[in-house]
Length: 158
Length: 190
Image (cartoon, rainbow over all chains, first blue to last red):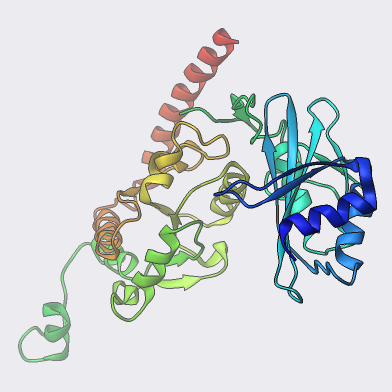
């Protein structure tokens, strides 16, 4: 299935929740979707017999300034096709439904996106920091992040 | 080898070595240093190469130990993140005296490539524990680490054992002075 066909199928199934489709080389074709129906869309992507996206390749997060985004790369090992989903969320209330129960891969990826970008994945069973210490303050990959002066009595700047 | 040959030959040397007790003790100490083994980043890969037969770190009398209580010195090989820094400090404190530290690679020496934008990196392991030998490089070649080991051995050879307590006390006095001066500065800044 081509990316355009996947987009048409999703559009016919979910209508308004599918916002935008972009297919411009050199980037992978991606679909922008709304965050409130995101869990159902993902479940459909995995369980539909013609889509069968059984593999979450990557989950990353991006800071676009006013908005934050999570980017999901899916691949189907059965049909060898792939698609990219983007979910934009407002910076002051970054909440996305967790897909950890659909793809186990998402467990640690969501924890990393939470740790570095501060996106809250609702429904995740253990959303705690994964790389930084548990008592770390702030989200280091956000563009407005300020390096702390000290941590536990250790000076951080050079 | 000269000394050992003489010991084995009863006619030439009479089986006697003359030397100061300190010198002989230091000879033994310098040639059997056990190190605490852990690697933090890519320097650990070079460190493994040093351990492997081609460079054969054990010919210096070193044996890797997995417990700080059995270790004489510690090789900090790689980037010291703030999260790891606390563990390193605790491991160092668990080692018994006398203890030494080799800082291996640019990251452990001064923060390396993370010196400006590394929000998570301690800019030099000498900010939390005293370092005896710095090995430069990113990462250092195995030969460089061996050179560092030789430097550490020659340092141990020259150490004064019997006046050490007295000397340490004096150093401590100096350190506390420096420390209190620093803390005053910090207070003023706050």
